[in-house]
Length: 249
Image 1 (spheres, rainbow, N blue to C red):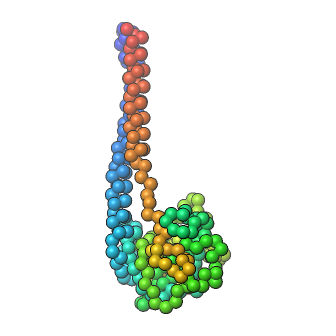
Image 2: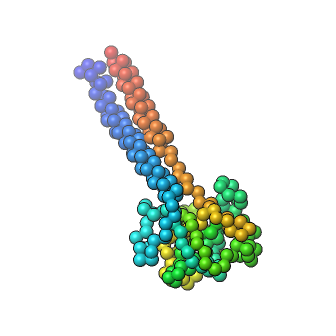
Image 3: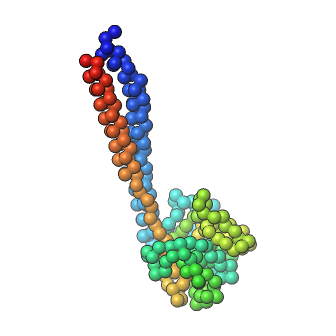
């Protein structure tokens, strides 16, 4: 057996590993391109929902069919009476955009009692830390019949980094209408919330219209990275194989 043939056969195993690595890297790049198309479509659909005219919230007999894929961020409206005595404050930190107040504070979540006797939880907006107690902002406790317009939101999902809600201590970190309803002893509560729009409240508190409708979209960069690594792997193996065969000649 010639040295050149032996060297060529010695490249078989490295070639197999290189081909497997190349297949994985190219596959990851293609997957990121597919994710890019999905994310672009999602962003376009959400943007269309937020700019559409407000529609009435789903009827109570339709609540079980409401889901994030079809309904989240739809512009909706609802009329009823705020139950300010059942208000819950959820800790948060907000940036300056797009409102006047920023930093640590609370979302003010208030049950809106509908004419039917059912409830929908309304995120009325943001208040700074020193305005947590309703008594510190009495002008914002709007009485009587009101109409709320805003974005339909599904329950906020728990993460490894968010503390658990502690209703016994009135310490809330996650917006979950079902958990809030149980803590307040409310029945017939919608499984979604309304993020109120920027319609002003007395003294500007709570400050509505603070929903951030933004999605990270780095899939193109990720795809370029994976395809770049695949090209680098192919180049490294080509140089390696050329040097091995050259040494045998």
